Image (tube, rainbow, N blue to C red; front, side, top):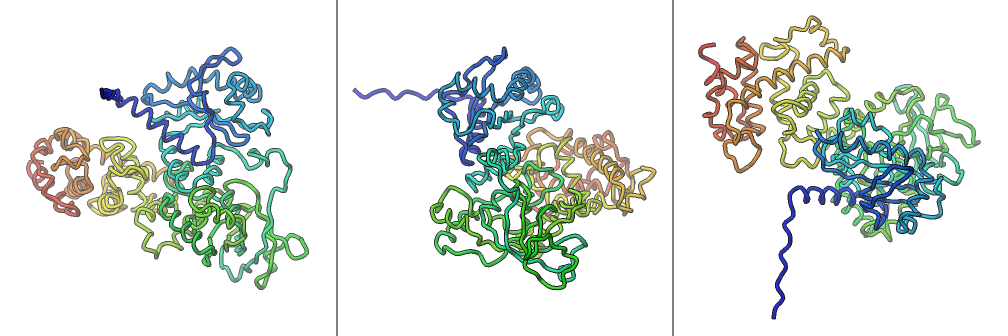
Amino acid sequence: MAKKTKRRKKVSPEELEKRNHRKDVRAVFRNAGFTKVLSVSDKEFTFNGHTSDFDDVFVYQNVILFLEYTTTKSSKIRDHLKPKKLIYDEILSNSASFIEFFENKFSKFKETRDQYYDPIQCQIRILYCSKNSVSPKYKEQISTISYFDYPLVKYFKNVAEAVKKSARFEIFSFLGLSNNEVGKDSINSSNGSEDYQGSILPHSYSNFDYGYKVISFYIDPLSLLHRSYVLRRDGWKDQAGVYQRMISKGKINNIRKYLNSKERVFINNIIVTLPSDTKLLNKNGNTLNPNTLTKTEPVTIQIPKRYNVIGLIDGQHRVFSYHEGGLYDEKIGKLREKQNLLVTGIIYPDTILDQDKTKFEANLFLEINSNQSNAKSDIKQAIGLILKPFSSESIAKALINKLNNNGPLEDNFERHFYDKKKIKTTSIVSYGLKPLIKLGGDDSLYKIWSHPQKLEIKDESDEKLLEAYLEFCTSQVNDFIAAAKDNLSSNKWTRSKEEKNKVLTTTAINGFIICLRQIIENNHKTDYAYYKNKLKHLNSFDFSEYKSSQYGRMGRDIYNKYFTNNR
């Protein structure tokens, strides 16, 4: 008699969300070379009078990560997080004794933890992994732990899938760990820099500003993997100063295939920036004075051994193709430690500010990539925010970010690389918002902005005034879009492809913005109540009639149909 097939218990959406969240986080650390400790997940313990548990524990040499997962809604996170503060503080202020306690409590933890390191030599980090956003206010109140927010999980998951174990260096930087706190470097006293032989270009040849030094040298990929950073969008660094694209697993794998089959180096150079404490020594081992050079000279370059100090401007995929782990690693591992990558480096002056570093790197990246087909408009817009924040395009880019943060369009635009089903912003910035916010003209929001110092914004120096204009523009656009939304049936306020007459499209949003420009040009009222009344029959408007770039015609048609009579 055949056995009856057991029906699988149907998994609830909530449980599925929890499983997928944990799966994503675990994938980050597994691919980055951490080891998951078995038999400790969700196991209760009492330490120094405080009872709690952790959902997962990961270890890498002397680094120990204790993870707490939650899919609690943002509005409830305070209630979930606040009670844990006492135990977190107790653990972090008594880390060595907690490790000893945890080893006695859980034998699997002791088996997994690298016993080469004494508990006092270990680095503990507690990661609060929330699927939903955590208020900055709560993060400030409990600031001793690391917040592994979901966008960061997706970012690091993508990076770790692409570069495998070499992702750990960026993870260490995110966790606030320095090179001399991780692994054997935390025990052994070693030189704080490594030497490379190269050459330096005289200032008269480079034409960079005074204080910048241009050098060329060969370096092993492993050293670059340890120390480099890339200002990628969607990463964990300040989002106001990032612009490079997410690393591509496909590109990495193609380059590794080339390295495996050809077993030879790339002949084109990597472009990097180097920290101001990079030392240059002449042939006698003395500090070199670049100001005395009249020709290219050989030089010994001492680069600090720290994470996150070499800025990769051009060549991130070539560098990261040498990553540790994954396909072809037997052959590529041998190449990883050879000084076979030619690097052109720009050493920063001693007095440079962080914001000036960001501007310099962004400008250099743009110079290198602006004539290439892959220098897309969204990259140029992101760089524009750094280099030219007062330009119309940058104001428009900043405005769409604000519209995405609050108001009727909140969270409908692409914010992260994985937001595949959300609305792309490039065309809305260029053809919708840029003409609307320009600093002049009869159809611009600038015309109706009543700020007493509005003329001074054209001096491009007052950031507070720029912010005031952005807040005004945000309010005005939100008023118009909110009035439109409130006159539409809910089924139309969607991005779903199944709804033919949907409104959340590039075409419709640009159409609304163009209509708003005509309202301003023809001196109508500009407030929510007026818009709401005028657009009361908007639900009968056929949005599906307008395709792709026909937003100009749509905007004019909305204006003519609803705003030309009975002002």
